[in-house]
Length: 361
Image (tube, rainbow, N blue to C red; front, top):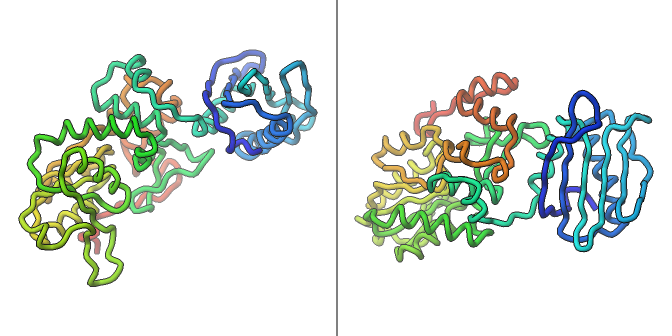
C-alpha cells in the first residue's frame, strides 16, 4: 500500500514538543477504515520512502516495528540518529496516523497529505466558520472541494499557465464541479440568480471544460445551448457543435466558460459567433483570476459577469480550516499576483510576456 493510495477522512497539523530547539509539529490523519497489519507495514515503508525523496534526503532507514497494544510505532533514522516518528493506531472502525517531525518538515508533510483528504462538501460548516459575501462563500466551497490547487514547486511541480509557457503557484480547476452535486447545484443556482435578468436567446460553452457548466445553466434557464470547438479539426469543419448557421443568425448569445485569465480564447469565439450572424454582449465565468481578462473582453464589446474571483479566494474571511492554506503559500501567491515577472525572476524562471494570438508578430 502506497501513501498516495490512502484516503484520509481528516488531517490536522498542530504544534508539538520534544524535538529540539527548532520547534516541532505533529501531523495527524485518519483513514475511514481499519488497516490490516500488512497494509500498515507497507504504508510505513512508503512513508519512509516519501519522506526521504521529498522532505529529508538524509534519511537512511526505517526502524524495526515497535508494537504496544493497538498501536504500531516506527522511527525514521539517519544512520542511528532519529529524524521523526510514525505512529499507527488501530481504533474500532478507523486507523489514526501520527507523524512527529521538526516543524518545517511537519508543514511539508501536511501539505503533501492535504490533497488526499476525502472531500465532504459542507456549506453549513463554511457558514459557521465565516461570514463572507456570496463571492467569498463560493470561493470557500471551491477551496473545500480542492478546485483551487496550490504548489510551491517543492512537493509537486509548479502549475503551467499562459499557454503552458509560464508558471504559477496556484491553479483554479472548476471542471470537477459535477463530481460534487450539492456544490454544483449551489454554485450554478447562484449563477442563475446572477444571470436571469440578462437578455439572451441561447448559451454557448467552450470545449471542453465549460460544456457541462453551460448545459446545466441552459437547463436551469430553459435556454438552447451549443458549444464552440477549441480548434477546427479540418479546414471546412464548423467552429460550433449543436447549432446550425441559420439558427444562430441574429440570436443573442451568452458565452459561458469556467475561468477567465486573459480572455483571448473567448475573444476568438466571440468573433466566430459574430461571423455567423450572432450577437454577443455578455460573458459569464465562475472564477475570474483578475489578470486583465475583463479588459480584453471589454475591447471586443463584451461585459464580464462572474461568481467569484481571486480577491475573494484569498480573502482573510476564509479560514485555514477551509482552505488548508499555509502562511508561506499565502505569501507566495500574493507575490506572484503582485508581479508575475519578478516572481519568475526570483525563482530563476523565464517569464514570457505573451500577446493575443492576433497581435503576435
